Image 1: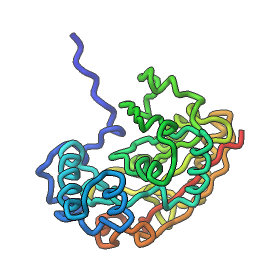
Image 2 (image 1 turned 180 degrees about the vertical axis):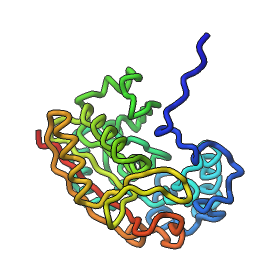
Image 3 (image 1 turned 90 degrees about the vertical axis):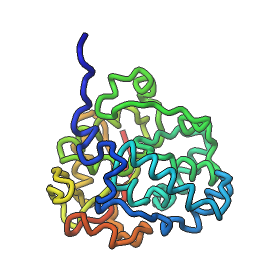
Image 4 (image 1 turned 180 degrees about the horizontal axis):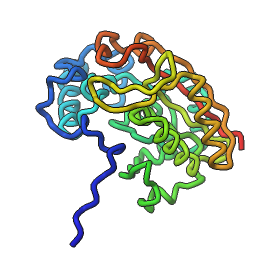
Length: 272
């Protein structure tokens, strides 16, 4: 009998391996209550039926359960409590298209906060692949290995991918972006957020000890030009640098990142 195939390093980085005791990491906060913003409290109370006086206990319990599975920085810092998608300049368009029947795929959906935000704001959940919800456990870098994922090829109007591709170098980010093309209809949007930098460059994060590419808006657009050239498609990429304050994150919590690191907010439209 052959041994189980190990996931590739890009899909399971060493720093995120499960270990509930790794609380000495600079990306783990004992308290994440500061991320219970009014909009998050409203969502928890109205959508998830968690009373306000129980929300802190609830989110810490969920965070610790998730941390024991994968110790990602966004988990330990609690930034998943701050909705990403509703800060996007494309959010009104996304809501409008979903209300008109468009389909939505969230890659690396984590604890599904963005999809809950969409439903809370009026998107029909049946079109969110599905919030009736249908979750597919798969590796976006190897979609051909999952028949369920393969069945979605060419059928998606809006693809959200946040806090995923920044884990990789240029080559793997380019490869991941090419994989997205197979799912995108003509006219589709790809949107999301990831860690970028005021200067496009490769960095070796001194804390994570991994090589990662940090985009600025120019390099991000260049990557999507290469995506189009490599997949016989055309894309128009827009990207903006956002400060930690813009995202509702505490700058002090990001001190372990590299100088110049910030957030890049992107919307990419398929034009052919």
